[in-house]
Length: 254
Image 1 (tube, helix red, strand yellow):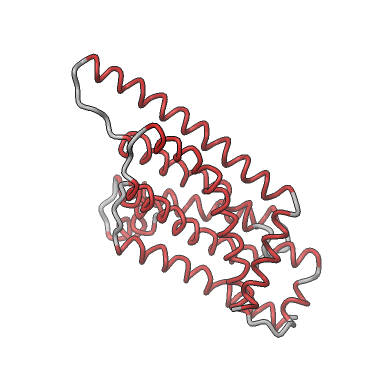
Image 2 (cartoon, helix red, strand yellow):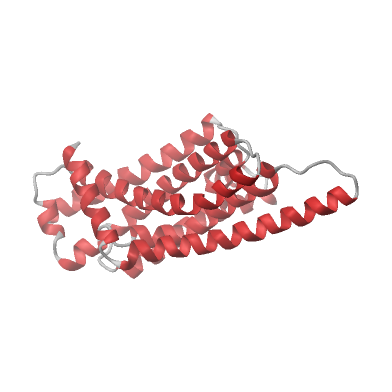
């Protein structure tokens, strides 16, 4: 476990020793801030309209937090490839991959350490943006449990996509190619759900089930469904398994 933490800490230092971490956190915070301002503004407007018509009070969780969590998952679709594209591609480009592969550290420790660093980078991005949600708890009374379930869903979804991106980064020495390919795969995993909207065949249902959007809907509602947790954990395992096989191939070539 110590070797995993050493590799993880090294990757985190690489992120924060360059503009990468600060750029990603700033981009994430600005985009999330705009979404927050827009959703809250619409919530206030609709709340005033409802009061004038004698309607019922609106729910912060349903009208603000749920759309925000769904929007955050969209932001991650674009930024996750920027996190993973350098994990192994940079090692290949700089020539340090041979040293890494011939070291006594196990392949599983290397890939878990790098994947964990990428996940912690994503957690840092989420953490900065959660300041906006804290404002809702200061001035409103949203239910905390759906927020925690939604954040857990974001981390599980990101963990799966980061695992896929980690694998793709092992297949090339070009960071741009790794980032573009990761974005393409993440986008496919995102839009697979569209097929089930007009097709009822078995293959369409399978594609719909493979969509990361399908399994995040329950988290956004504050519902912790076991099948959705299993899906994301399976995606993480599958991505890391492919990474392990790719690293094994690199080790033999090294």
